[in-house]
Image (cartoon, rainbow, N blue to C red):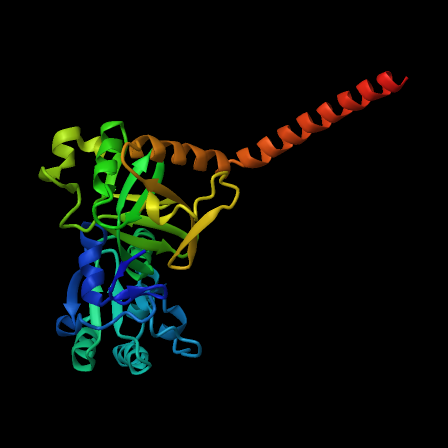
Length: 336
């Protein structure tokens, strides 16, 4: 599978505070209070930290590389301190490399704290969201930004609830096959280029289109088509789990490679995750849409534990055993 070079890889993506603010959008509603010129700072550890012990003056094991969340409890404690101690505690965290502080519930840091941040280059943000709500939403945004990802040459569709990624040489009919599937009720995820991210916690892959090409397909002889306008909004998906990789190859190139029984299961490894993989030979007259639909149903059955090759083998053995017993009885009667 051909991949495109990106700033992300199997170890994860790098992103800045500015990326975090933009990705959060209306979901996090962040505003910059101090350090606006330093928003290009890279987030080294994409996790929220509540620095209660650090604010109390205990800095051992202080998670400085995380985003520091100042909720109602932390802020109440800071406000209980005299001005000198408050400045010392904030400065102490910044001296230990803390670089981004987020105030929740619409609260603002005290003027002297803002001065410390501006002088030290630290970033201070504010959100009107409650602390627990912000922490929950920010975790999703951070995980998505930091997720290992890649971009591959391929077309992806959802067929009967299964995310199918097509790969193969140009001109073999990936887009045409996807279009035929969409006409029969499938949904387009991405055409030609598919962005794949890894859900590290669950070891799963998800595919999507780039923002600029989402919903569009290029069909040779027709041109660029907008799938939602032709087939409706239900004919597209923003993102879908990658559950099957289908490789289209010319029949002449795979004559000696085809496993006619399907006994040997194939897998394609993407970002360290193994995905079931089938190779479908392409030749004149083959109904690729029907073959892909069948491959999807087969994959669903196999995921549920059904093994047609094994079942057929057992059936043939039972038939052979039964036939052998009957032959023995007949011989015994003849010799009788």
